[in-house]
Amino acid sequence: MVEKKKVMVANRRKDLLKAAQEIFSQKGLADSNISEIARKAGIADSIIYHYFINKEDMLFYALADKLDEVERELKLHLEGIRDPVSKLSKMIWYHLYINDLSPYETRVLKDLLFECRSNQSFYLHEGYQSLRRYTKNMSEILQQGVNEKVFRSDINLILVRNMIFGLLDEESLSRFSSQEIDSTLPDFNDIMDLVLAIISCEEGAAKESVNDDNKESRILKAAVRVFSEKGYNAATMAEIAYAANVAEGTIYIYYENKSDLLFSIPKRRFKWLSDSRDEVFHINCPIKKLRRFIRLLFTTFMGNRDFLRVFLLDIKLNKKFYVSSVYKDYIDFVSIIETILEEGKERGIFKSNINSRLFRNLFLGAFTHLATRWVILDKAKPIDMMQSIEDLVSLLCWSVVIDKAALQEIEE
Image 1 (cartoon, rainbow, N blue to C red):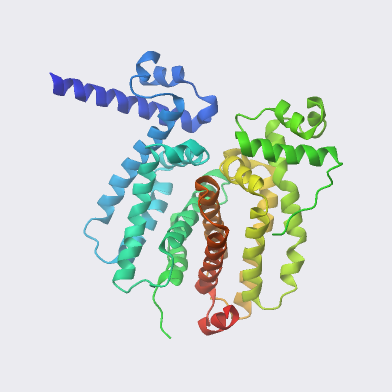
Image 2: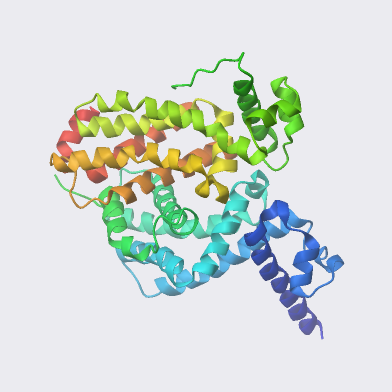
């Protein structure tokens, strides 16, 4: 009898999590409610609180449940595979495979990740451990490759892991959010070429100027500060108006609503970056040009910690961003990296088989993962952050150059 009751409780909790996954994916945490989830699961509202503290607690466990399912499936795919290169290939292939074979299920997973990763409470919740366990699979594969002298021993494995997961995240965003591509599996070989070029053993703050007397500028600066402190969902227009020292109605002269205000925040930053591209293209050497561009983006974004927090948590992890007009400005700027790569290919300095769009996503994914860790965990010292940036610059350049000796000379 006791055993039967345990099974019933477990099944009921599972039904709740499945319902929560679907509702949270469709509506997000802010617009979902307990009653709707209970109704979908066929359970009374009050029963939910026997299993979960609140709506947020349920969201975090909903993601954990989904990740545990994905990890179990991944481990089945990895069974019987011994060498680290094949394991890594299979894990990357699996990520692309579920994108294309089960787009609905993968979209749900990505939506839940969006919601959780943009919530600071998630990183202190038990549900975060499921994400850590999943990423540990990649770490163990990379460490095995180092131990067996297949992968380079002089690389930062955590950095490489974040680069790979970042690239896979960007691929999913290109597939589901911006719909830049219809499927991700065709990119598998190019992805593996990029990743192996980085890790395989081989022989042989710029800041935008703002006129504080301008009301619109004051509103934008206040919005950055308030969104950073309270989060987009919790912040109100009244609080932003107070911080900007303007009437609340004044905000609506410039912006239609809170969402319009949010997406207007990075516009000036992207314009400043685009105007700075001349600084990059004055350099003749494609390798130096690539290094300068990567550093430019990092230093510009990290020059204002509040802006970085808002961009990463409220904009970059917001599905609406990818269908907004400002997303085009963002892509127009970051696509400069593709122009640099193509120039390097034409001059015989960069490998001709490098997929420029995938390289762009590798860079963006690595930047997003690194910066998010710094913003959320807030443990990295500035000197460690700068070292990680330099390590990333070196790894990215290493993956594309033909003459490794020429790269080493430039770095020295």
